[in-house]
Length: 75
Image (cartoon, rainbow, N blue to C red):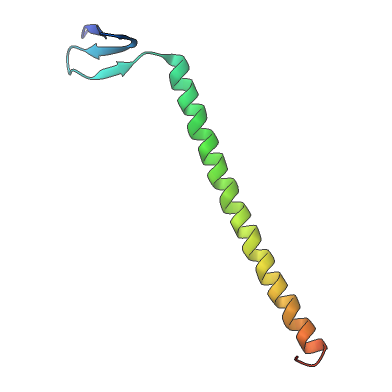
């Protein structure tokens, strides 16, 4: 099993001696980042939905406007 070496000045990082990879062992930071990614994805989906809703409303208003113009004689 490869030996893990603590990184100087950062207790939550370790270097894998087999492949020199840096590994973050801070689970709290990992979970916080995962939560941040999830929140960002949820916000992106909400923004897409709101944009779609606004486009639908614009279309509906344009349709109502056309109907009103026909109703009052095409002014």
